[in-house]
Length: 80
Image (cartoon, rainbow, N blue to C red; front, top):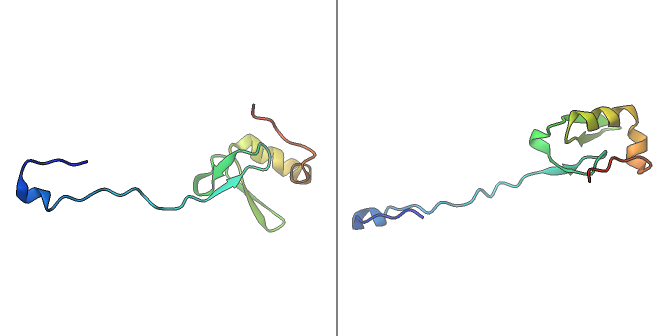
C-alpha cells in the first residue's frame, strides 16, 4: 500500500489492482504438465486440426513420433 503524510496526496492515491487477465493453459499430452499456451517452453504442434502445447522440446519430439500412443494413453512419461 502506498502511504503519504501529505493530506492533498492522499486523495490522489491509486490502489493497485491485480492483473485480471485470464491465462490460457493446456495439458502437455506426453507428461501431463500444465503449460501456458501463450509461451509454451516446448512449443506447439498441430495434429489432426488440434494444437497441442508442450513443456519442453523433448515432449514435443516424442509426441510427433507417436501421437496416437500418447493420445490413447498407451504411452506416457511420468514426471515424478
